[in-house]
Length: 421
Image 1 (cartoon, rainbow, N blue to C red):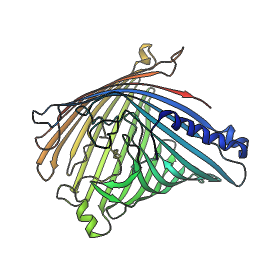
Image 2 (cartoon, rainbow, N blue to C red):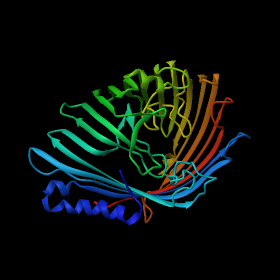
Image 3 (cartoon, rainbow, N blue to C red):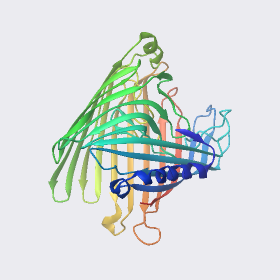
Image 4 (cartoon, one colour):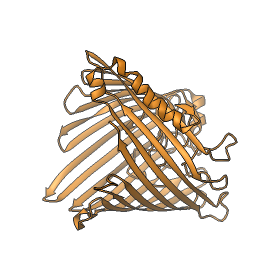
């Protein structure tokens, strides 16, 4: 992405780019175009509980805007299109002693949060039959590479990604990711794992729906000179009785080192090699408006679980922690309730608890971590504020001494997406 220092030019450039293509566009190019602006206001307070913590708390409040355009394709055997995303963050309250929530970028001195920062990303795309190639700014959501959207602005990658759906029920993806733009940054940086840069991450794989209720998936990924990874997954949805469902979500990774020994040595995490097996899965029982979930994971072998960005594909990716340190065994209990059953559509509640044990690092053996999260969200269903949403999020995280910071956290997120086309 390109760094832009003012809010207006980012949005103007986005929509100006789309307008600039209108003279060559056919009906499908414009007729199938989708455009929207999302406004997200977020307050976050993270209280560090250790007496020796270098920072007592991180507390920031900011406003974000994200504009998106996804064009249709021109007519012909080969269809051409353009996608664009412009993001702007505006500081409402922060300081250098309260920075670090992930909402705002730091200044050039790495201390003072930016008052505002913006970015623009473009992706050219080509379609042949049911196969689409995108080159430029990407936001994949795949088991081996995913973007993050849990703060003010979402992260992005730069690279190329091909998606093919020529066979019914089968989706194939192949691509190369060369840069990453984190959620609190306006620059494209090198692909990176554990502080070691990599030239690119290659991926290939896909998913196949054996039936309307059962899907299997496989992916292979390789972060150049750091790791290689195999993934296999299964998702099954069953109806047990009227109003009673059971979802099974199973995921398995096999990860090992790859490439030049010099880079592999540098990338070793906490003294261990990258050589592990990671199983995680979740069973979710739905009974009317209630959902009861039970999750489990086993991470065996050497080193932490390796993944690009901030989001591992794990059922225990929760509000504060990822539970991906070496040897972590963890279980999760989760409960969801939809208040539409009580005549309040749009109101939903979630709470979960994750407990991790047997964690190994260079400083801790047999470490423990746990986290408890609670979400309450309401989406206005009608009237002037239709689509306006408010989310209250609370999290508590605790760990063995020497692992990481103990945290109490609260977030207030207010959002609205305005469709433009």
